[in-house]
Amino acid sequence: MSAVASTLDCRGPFVIGGLGGSATRVYAALLQHAGLHMGGYLNPARDNLFVTLLLKRRYELLEDRRLALRALGLLEKKLARGGRMTLAEHAMLWRVARDVSLRGHSYQGHGRGWWAWQAALRVARSRPPQLEGSRGWGFKEPNTHVFLEALAERFEGLRFMYVVRHGLDMAFSGNVAQLHAW
Image 1 (cartoon, rainbow, N blue to C red):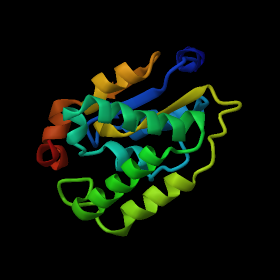
Image 2: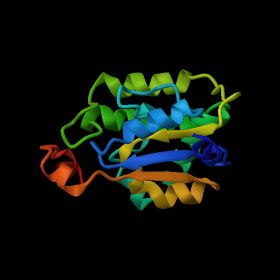
Image 3: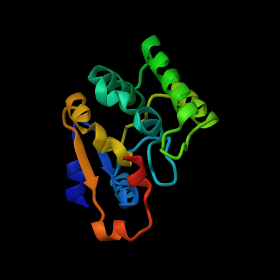
């Protein structure tokens, strides 16, 4: 565990990505146990729901690097630095909430409706993170590999773990969510 702990001591975030169903939640739990702050708004799979709201299936972020970097800046502010949101950040957050409430954050439309508004309100009201005593900060959201270039550009010292499950396990698991999503 000391080798893992020394890996966590870094300037940037530790981000876990991978295909859904590849055991990313296991690694998130291990890193939390080792002292990494993964955020306070997590689902049972330990996905950071603010990351889900802000980034998942947000294809316009792939086309507009400046927008992606602003979204990642807001993410850092809410997960690591603290500070008041600017008017532009509020506008971006509420636009995302509107879009996700109408379309959802998955190809199946999960996240449509009030969830997105409740998530945005929770993020807007969140207090500065309490990182004292933690080894650093990070988040887990399986789809973050899609934004890896922007993550690397935004966060000096980024640590990224991509979890891969054996292809045959995935092929025979009946989990076709990633096939439909991407």
